[in-house]
Length: 40
Image (cartoon, rainbow, N blue to C red; front, side, top):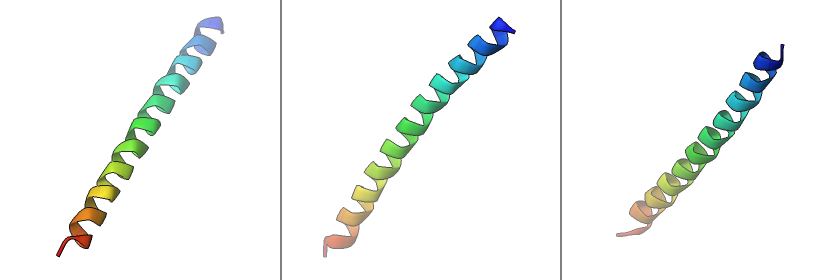
């Protein structure tokens, strides 16, 4: 039970880091798309 709880916390931390990195990449791509669209 304790091992399962520890694994769940570890998965949560890894998932949070992955989601934060994914959102950061999406935001960066969005800015790049805006720059390409704005440039004549």
